Amino acid sequence: MTNQTEKKYRIRNWKEYNKALINRGSISIWFSDDVIEKWNAKQSIKRGRPKIYSDEAILCMLMIKSVYKLPLRSLRGFMISIINMLGLCLKTPCYTRISRRASELGQEIKQLGNKKVTDIVFDSSGLKVYGEGEWKVKKHGKSKRRTWRKIHIAMCPNNHELIVSYLGENNEADCEVIPKIAKHFPKSIKRGYGDGAYDTDGCHAIFHSMGIESIVPPKRGAILHESESKPWMKSRNDAIRAIIGLGNDDDARKLWKILAGYHKRSLVETGFYRWKTIFGDKLQSRKLTNQKGEVYAKSMAFNKMT
Image (cartoon, rainbow, N blue to C red):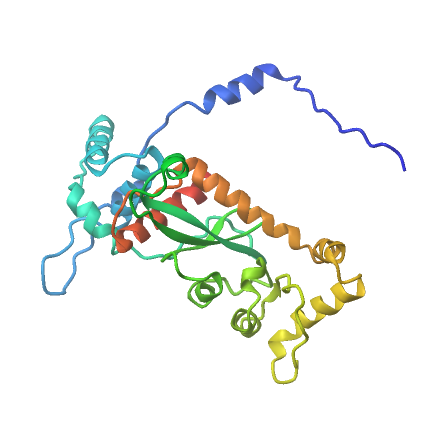
């Protein structure tokens, strides 16, 4: 065994490096022609009051709201100032209209990359709504009921782009959400990586029906299932046999994860870290329907930043 020293990469192009750091603080704001054309809603033949602003306009404002962490009233003033400075003939929706329309936005995340997605990693995390902070709860106990939501994301480990984001109740188990988000998976996906919470009969059956190989660590002490009546359990049985053959202990599970490439799943944890670093770990909206629109706008902004 030879000692491998860590390589240190020294910065030599200080001029370009400093310029890159300075450019991180520069601001360039513009409206593309495509956004200007789609700002106003198309005329509808349906009965009732027609929409003035398109879904793209509402989504654009919600994305700016998420990035700059603005309240709704401040958001409208911010957008009015930008539109006036650019000399555009665009109206700005009222803050009440933005709040109402946020609940009507779809949840389909547009893929920005051109490459086909073959692998996908997924997990869940919590987002606060309101309640006391951790320090006060630790020192004095709960003085107000804390409310939070559970966000489930699926992302591509190659380009770190979000494929699906779903916001649900805090009592929804991870395995219960898979049927709701799997229908939005691209058909090109071949492998899915998840933690032990997705080691259920239902999750394996859904992945098998979609032609996706589920790389999920089986629970400790898991037993083999009949693969003839349940063909979706074949990959799970193979994982159990491999772990038993490697020694059936913690070291065997670690070695199986390396051989199966399971550690790729940790990239979704990095995605959550980036999400909460950029947008925070708290939701500003109070209603679940508006919170879903808020998470959708943040997901779109997340992909553009990526």
